[in-house]
Length: 325
Image (cartoon, rainbow, N blue to C red):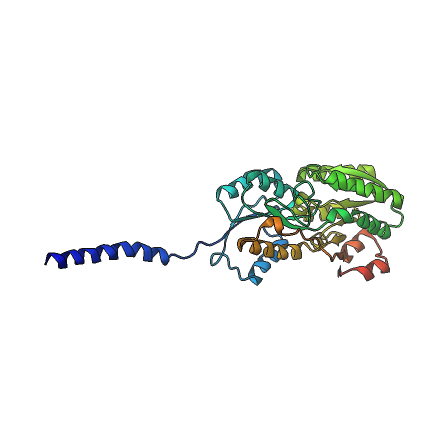
């Protein structure tokens, strides 16, 4: 009798010991968490490319991936704070935009992998394009290197052009180098360029007032997160001040800007989903080369050209990937 009771007790104990193990085995796998630190407006069509890329790779938010988003909404001063917030959440990978976003993320963590979309040289933030080293990789649209070509296009649009305003955010450390590039191009084209700085929406207004006083004949806008966030404002102010303007991304022309020339930002963000996927599956960001675009698109807004009284040269129209009428 005692032997049967002892065996029974052992059986109950074994069942009790097995229940937690079985319960643990039935727990769903932990979903990967992406920390997303966008620098543009939440409604930007650029981000549709990233969402499309995730869908193509089989990701469904809430089902097999969690996305923690912290919107900077054009206020770049908030990037360090938001990056630290994502780091405290211990996300599996962080997606950031621009040189400013990458710098904030690198200062917030030394362990969480970072995927970046940037339009300027990343030499000071990664070891090399081919082997980035460290925890960051991604894509660069090399917008800064196209500044001479954009200036040449403005000269073709306005043959009598003599003075060109250059608008940029001086808090982006790459813009001093980009301004040297446009100065060299201006010497070849026999143009005079003058810098106008803006760190905020208010300073953008002041810069345009300065352009009017300077009698600028056209405008080149250097791309960074601040300028992309205010694309519509820039397009409107350029038209109001009757300044033929060129920018790096097609969204500027879509918003009423005259001309855009550069890589497709939307396509770049679609490709960034591949980087996120690779890292979530165990790839080391140090070994993932930073990709550069091979295709650039020229978009011309004929409606804006007409409002400015400009006749678009046939050779430029023939080169356009899209003409907005």
